[in-house]
Length: 229
Image (cartoon, rainbow, N blue to C red; front, side, top):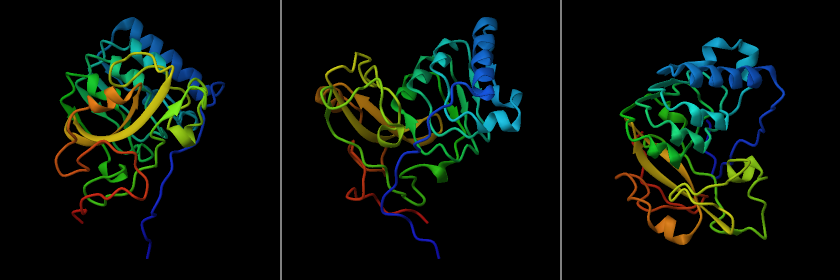
């Protein structure tokens, strides 16, 4: 019988920016930005081998301000960049069956028109059915102790943090990472916050009811409400 691990960590893969799948995805983003399409399904235009080469979306998705419907079915993605928050027309978000996506960036909450999502919720950290643990975060890291432009994804969940998830100001003196569970579209998602200050952490909204009631740093010491199954 399998038992749930007491601790989990972020996927540590780094994107191969020379891979054919990545280069094709970059081109598809540019095409979608240029023709201002409203539906973007990039992975259907990649071969199986190319899809496996892509483990994140490029920051250039910030250009997709006309996209209303984003489809990421069955991908090999392990993280979504914070630039998704610039997709201000987004209404429908469908990363269903992308089972390696266990969390999402807090910046997704900036998509104010987002009203519908289809997410594989059983894969999410802290999901209400199984309550799997969250990766442990470092509460405060100063610029003297880390280069925020060159981070290890397996430790930080990203390879760089440049702007605050809350105020959008620069993260140049200190980095404060916390988890918060919030409703996005039609799902409750574990959201990773990269904040520039304690004040920005304090400004976060109340987490969704039935989940950990405060922003937290994850790890085995965090007590979650009981799962439903």
